[in-house]
Structure formats: C-alpha cells, structure tokens
Image (tube, rainbow, N blue to C red; front, side, top):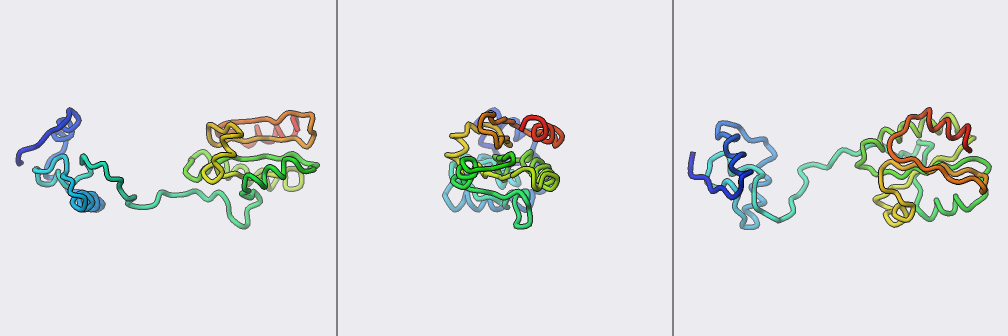
Amino acid sequence: MGLLQIHSPIAIFLSSRVSSSHSKPPCLPRFQDSAKKFGQSSLFSSSPGIGDGPFSLSTVPRKLLCTPPRGKHVREDYLVKKLSAQEVQELVRGERSVPLIIDFYATWCGPCILMAQELEMLAVEYENNAIIVKVDTDDEYDFARDMQVRGLPTLYFISPDPTKEAIRTEGLIPIQMMRDILDNEM
C-alpha cells in the first residue's frame, strides 16, 4: 500500500477497514470520473484501489447513479385521483352528500405507498359513500404547508355536515380505523 493522506478520524477508521484486495462495485468509476472532471482529488488519492471510491472532499453535487424507485400512487384506472390544491379547495367548498378524504402524500414516502393501497381498497368499498382524493406534497408544497402537513402520510376526513370538524390523522393507519371514522364520525 502506498502513503495515505489522512484528513480526519473517519478517514483513519475507513482506511483501516478498506484493503486493496476488495474489488470495487461497477458504479464507482462515475465518482472517480466526476472528481477528475472538476479537478478534485480523492481523499485516499495515493492508495491503489481505495482512491477510486466515493470518499472525496468534493463539494460538487453528484448525479444519481439510478433513479430511486417510485411507488404506484396514481394510475388512470385508480378510483383515488390526484388533484391540485385549487381542485381540492373547490371540492371542500362545494356541496357534497358524502364524506371527503384528502390524502397528503409524497412519491418517495414508503408509508404513503402502503397507505395508497389501503385507500384504493377503501375507495372500492365506499365507492358511492365517500370521495377520496390525493395531494402530492412535492407538487403542492404551499397548500400542504397551509394545511399544516408535517408528517406523511396525512389524512383529512371532512364531513358533508359543515357543523362537524374535520378529523386529521398523521402516519400510516389501518384500514379498519378509516372505516370506523367514516362509519361513526362522519
């Protein structure tokens, strides 16, 4: 092994854990190429097999190696439709004879993916007895902030009776709890 240029205690730990006999994953050359492109040297620049890794002092933003997986939240054949903030506000203000459920979600949120499946099953059960819609918090950030959405998924259950207050839940809740809210509280 060659001479190491160590700049932090973490680098000391990593250098003691990494040996030159390890083969590098096929995705690492991109990190090395981007460092060379911007004239940056790797943290472990003089060690063979180690300097090729993602440990660099570069502050240049890196490109994603692959797009993150996205759950299927909304499709054309789903009963739960994605609406804009304007459409949701019009729906809330309008006349309804059935309860409204608003699901605030994000495409990168794991519990939101599970909640989307439960909401779709609930939409099948309550097809004519409830309206269920979705709002993407990344697309409608200001609306989500105004609605005080701090955790995902967040559901609002809004009764057709204007004298009843809306019920707000945060986090993944079981489908039976949603049924109970619809049947007993709305």
